[in-house]
Each structure stands twice: as structure tokens, then as C-alpha cells.
Image (tube, rainbow, N blue to C red):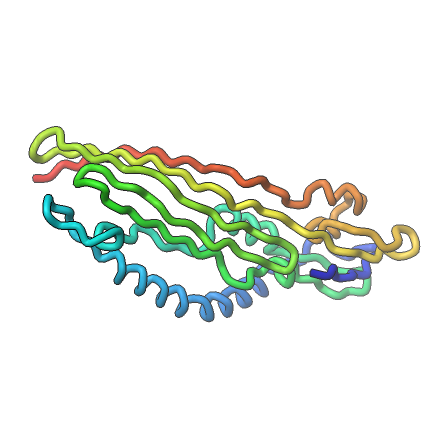
Length: 225
């Protein structure tokens, strides 16, 4: 995508609150995305209405699967939202709302399933679609793991879950700023264009987070009366 040119000189205010504008824009986008998300959730839940597996019953992967989580957002999505929930003022008095560049086209949607391999062993799988904005890109993720369950007594069960979220590389693109007769036209980090850092130095803070694995280890004791 092309870069926006911002006429920057002596900035009147380092930070002009853009949170209200962001909330209004995000609410509009959420209202548009929510019906589609609910439709997807209904379809997934309908396919994932599994039953306990008995010795002579196997309805295939969907018959042995259930939807355990459906969410919008994520850690990196929240990072983008919190970092860009402000703005600044140009030398001519025009307010710049950073959400014009950091609002997602569609919020990141992730789904997680559990498929039973046996009454005591299950596979955790799923993923997220990722998201894009004008100045950033968040890659898709995959969720993989396993869950074990064993009975200690007739009313005490131990369940252990090990899973990981892989991927989700976050990349950010720069803006082009016109800093007047002194600074000229330079590439600059959009979020730090109003800071006291020289434009070239702000480029060091562009998001370029490598794909990573986030591990989860969970131990649950279930006592029934």
C-alpha cells in the first residue's frame, strides 16, 4: 500500500486523544463483523456437536469434535489497538487519528476444537485468520496440542492439557512525513511521528515481531459428589 504524506513541522501537541474516535470506528466495524462471526460460530458448533465415543460408535472427525473457543482479537491485536489509540496534531492544527491506519479491515477471528481419539485422549487444534490494516499486517496462527484425562477414583479425575499457538508474525509499514525546510521529506514510524526522536530513529521501533510459539500447560482436578 502507498504511504501517506503528513506535513509535519513544529508539533503543537505530542499526543491528542484519539480514543473516542477509535472506539466509534471500532464499534461500527464490530457491528458489521459480529453477524458473520455468529454465523460461523453457529455452523462450527453445529458441525462439532460430538458425542462420547463408545467401543462401537465413531461418527468421524466432526462427530468426535467439539468447539471449545471462538474469539476475536488476541495478544498482538490488542497490542496494535492499545498502541494506536491516540493521535497527534500537525503544525497547521490538524488532528491526526492513528486509527485511520491501524483499524483492522476485519478483526482477527480464531477457533479452537478438541477431537477425541479415545475416552481419555484428545487432540487440540484450530487457528486464527490474522488481520490487516493500512499500516500493519498480522499473520495467521495455528493452535496444536493434546489433552489427557485419567480417573484416580470413581469421583476424582485429573485432566492435563498441553498446547501451543504458533505463528502470528506482526509487521508494520512506515509513513512519509514532510518535516518542512529543516527536516524535509523522510520515512517515519507513523506512531512516533510526533515524538522527539529524529524520524530515522523512529524506524527502529517499527513492529517486526517474528512468528513465535505460545505454550499453555494446564492441570485440572475434577471432584464429583
